[in-house]
Length: 289
Image (cartoon, rainbow, N blue to C red):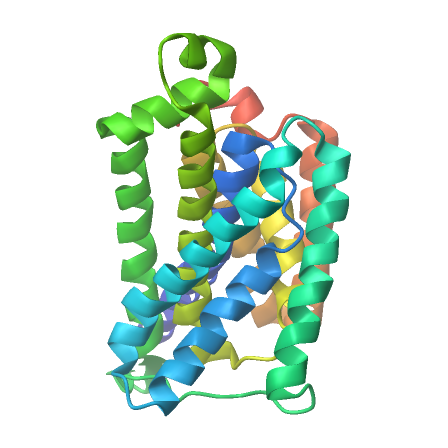
C-alpha cells in the first residue's frame, strides 16, 4: 500500500510539473496566438532570479513566489512593447523574432554566469516518510502550488473585469476597440501575465532541476506539445494535456527509465494529434476556458 501511495504521488507530481511549465505558454499562445519560442528562456530567467536573490541573502520563498514572477513579468512587458506588439497576426514572424530573442537571452545569461556548470539550490521542506518509502516535501508543495495557480488563473480570466476584457479582446479586437477598450494595453498586460506565470514556474522548479543558460531547451518542447495537444481551451486544454502526457511520461519512466518516458510522451502526442488534430478540447470541453 505504501508503494502505491508513493507511486501515485510521483504520478501526480509528473502531471503537475508538466502543467506548471506549460501554463504561461498556454496564456500567451492560447489567447494571443503568439508562438513564443523564448518560453524556455523565460523559465530560465525565473530560475536565475531565484539563484541571484538567494545568494544575496533574500529568503528563498520570497525569491520564488514574489521576485521570480515580478522580474520575468516586467521583462515580458518590455519584450511585448519593444518586439511583439509589431507582429500580432503574423505567426511566422513572431516565431522567428522570439527564436532570436531566445538566442539573445541565452547569450546574455551565458556571458554573466558561464555555461559549464548548473547552478543548484537545495530544495526546502525536506523528506516525508510513507512507510518504507519517502517522497520530497517540496514536490508535494509544487503539486499544491500548481493546483492553486490553475485556480487563480481561472478566477482572473473568468471572474474579473481584466479577464473579461482580455477574453473579449482576443476574440474580436476591433469590436473591443470600438467599445473603448485599449487593446494595446490589454495585449501588454496579457503577455506580461503569461511571462509572470512562466517566471514563477521557473523559480519554483529551480531547486528541483538546477539552472543552466540552456535549460530552456528541456522545457520548450514539452510545453508546446502539452499546449497543442490540449487544444484551444487554455486551462482545460493544459490540464487535460498534462494529465494524459504527464501520466504516460511518469508510467513509462517508472517501467523503463526516463529516456523511454520522454519517447513515450512524444509518441503519445503524435498519436493524439493524428486522431484529434484540434487537440483534446477540440472534441471535448469545447466551451471550457
